[in-house]
Image (cartoon, rainbow, N blue to C red):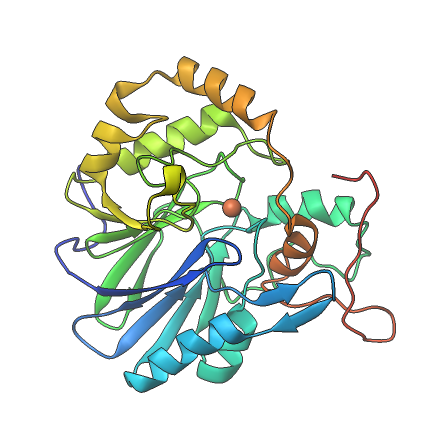
Length: 294
Ligand SMILES: [Fe+2]
C-alpha cells in the first residue's frame, strides 16, 4: 500500500487492558489532539457454567476513561469474536459512542442465524450496529483520522483498523512467536487469511501493531504490541517470506487438531447481536446450545 487515506504520522496513546480469563487484549486509543478516544474489542465477563454475566473488565476500562476525562466516540469490534463476549452495549450505555464492525457481519449473521435457528426477528442486515465499515472507509476519532481494511480469513467480517501509526489487527496476526489465528470456523479460509496478512505486512515497517490475543507461548510473559517489520521478519507462520501454499498446508493441519474455543457458543450468539444478550419469547435473557450444530 503506497497511498494511505489518513495521516499515519499521528501517534495515538494506546492503553491496553488484558483479560486473563480469555487472553483478550482490549484497547482505549486516544487522539493526541483532543480528548476523544475509541474502545477496541472490549470484554464482558461470563461464568458460563453458572450462566452469570458480570462487568469487571468493562468497568476497569470505563473507570480509566472517566479518570482521564475522555469522550468515547467509537466502540469498535475487529470481528465477531468466538472466544469472548463483547461489552460494547454496556460501555455505550455508560459512556456513549458508536458501535462499529465490518459490513461483512451480514455474512456472519446469515451463517450463525442458521446454526442457532434464529427466527425472522433476528435481523441479518447488521442493523444491530451503529456503523458498518467497508474496505478503505475512513472515520475520525476527534481530530485523528482512522481507516478500516478488509482482512478476512479467520472470519469473513474481520477488519484491521489503522489509527495514526497504530494498527489493531484483531485475530489476523498474533505476536511473532504466536503466529496466526485459526481459519477453520464457518466462513474461514487459510488462503484468504494469508492474503489478508500480506495486506497488513504491506503497511510501513515501523507501524505499531496491537494484537487482540496473546497466550504467552513457551512460558513468556503476555505481550500485545509489535511492529510490521518484526512480524515480517520473525512471525513463525508467515515471516521470512513463507509461501501461501506452505501456510495453507500448515494452517489446515494445525486447525484440524484444535478444540472449539470454550466460549464459542455464548460468544457467537451475543457478538452477532453487537453484544446484546438474546431473549426468549418472554423477554428473559437466554442462550441456546445447538446440539452437534457447529
Ligand atoms: Fe477471533
